[in-house]
Length: 433
Length: 119
Image 1 (tube, rainbow over the protein chains, first blue to last red):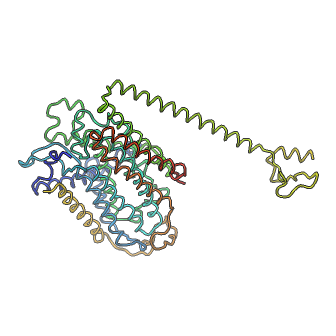
Image 2 (image 1 turned 30 degrees about the horizontal axis):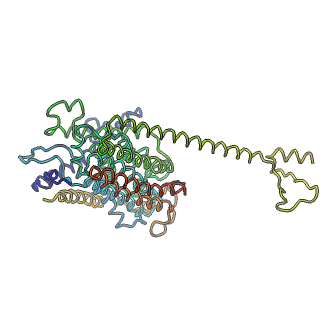
Image 3 (image 1 turned 90 degrees about the vertical axis):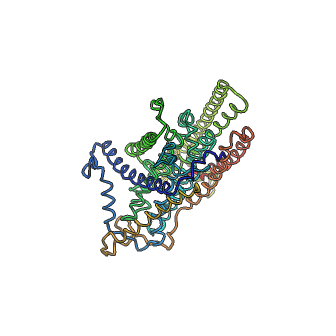
């Protein structure tokens, strides 16, 4: 790794580290409160309702008040709960949710009280890997919460949730590969600066789409909110949680939403870099302005989350797992290989863009013809199966065919019982006989 | 200061906040005893008796976890390859292609054996 870029990290004075940590903490809590309110307002509007508008201006303080209300509610620990694990599960969830934000870049180098420092807590050569690792630790909180509640629904909800999150984590992890390939780095700050000419969402659109799909599955949000399917599992893994313990899970869920949105922004939408018309302005990428662009991009993703929730019905669990394992994973593998092959062809064998396009066209043509042939084969098999089925249904029913189970007496005919009226041939034979 | 130290600081703050909240819930809320409250919640019916340790659940989850490990390890190999891609160039591409085909054989086998079905 080129170590020089990381020179700006890890050299902050202690008070600046504390300041940044506090800023991230406060920002995440505020974003959570805001997102809960925003989601309720937007979903309300989409459903022809008004939504919370009483507490504070536009109801903005609603989620804060809900938090206080939760704190004043009785805390119930079920008799069957495994108390130690039951206690630690929300702590794991909330801590992991906060931690993932440590490597998200918010902006370029700025001056804070006379100290030049990047608007990012820290960065190192494997920081995206770190985010994935922390996200995996968050799953422990969920599965332990479900297990320790000593109740059927939370157990099933926790299991579902973990199965879903690990399944979608694969597709998510694979969608990053093409980004690393282009950026040549796993450090978030370098990935952002690698997008200076063009965002990865544009040149790696399939990766972007796969990531956006899997990030919804990863955060257990509608239409993939199966762990919390009310009709099947009550509240899912947090059914037995109440008061502030429940609030911790709620907080973790919304912070995770913000985290995956921030990660999408960092890896695909150029992080804090100004979007096109604004980037024409000289100082768009300097000072504190990028913080604004970053926040706007994250809010776009959060709005998409809310929009999806208001629009799409929940998937069935088998459809959901099928989609993850049979569509997203093979699609990402194929896409990674296409990207890698195209890059090698251009960089090492000196193919021009025109030749690359021709090769791409040939590959796509081969894939299309292949899929057409596969469809023909499948259709033929389906037709054959349908014919066989029709033949099976229309077959002549002979209960003593081939002398089974008892060889017939000479001249003996099958006796028609009332249950065997389905086959007209046998009926006819019985009448004739 | 090490690049990892800020993570520790953030972790301590987040952990302290979470522990404080979880512990505070014990003191802030009222306590009114009612036997039914402490039963497992099953929409009001008598709760199913739970064996110690959470009881049994479908083996399918275990299979999913195993498959996850296979693919996660594939990703572990893909990441360094992607970062060093420009240096490895065509050698790396062919090497990775062979590796991915090996994994795809397993994938096709699992698919064919209906290991990816959920029912």
